[in-house]
Image (cartoon, rainbow, N blue to C red):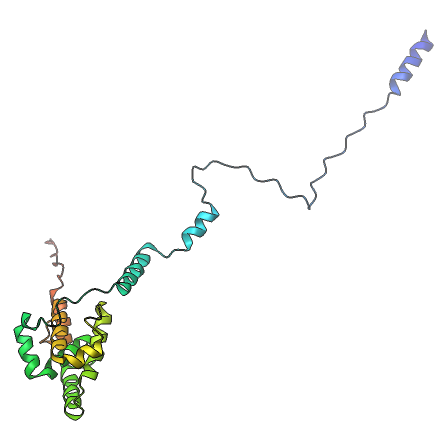
Length: 212
């Protein structure tokens, strides 16, 4: 009886111990890391194709300005008055018939934005007319420059041909065009600039309150 009990106790003591499991191996460097969990933020995700399509256009204001200028260049506007509408401004017509150098000098000063004076341009025009008789070759240059500033049509024909055939009428038309754009031709470029500065409204000054 004692022997059987001893054998059973020996068998219980010699039972094998459990084998520990191997620790988990870290992922290899070659395998890509798992993607981070997606968190809902409520902000719409912008597609890369949408970003590329948006970035290929300039800002709205610049795009509109460029489109407007390109439209004016491809579709020039007509003159405000016709070539033969000299009697619409009778004073300019008489001035040009008797002293075309004054009319041209005023036109040149406004077109050149004050870089040349009326007296210098008019004297040069008169000298070319007296020496060569081809002052129209000088004045047609300012017609082309005026058209470029205001995107005007080259009508009824080329600038050189208009001045060669109708010098006085073309000067009157250019003079009237500048007056339609708000210039006072008698005071020159700098006089118009000063008049525009005086016309700008100035905000009234607020007086400080009474202090004790």
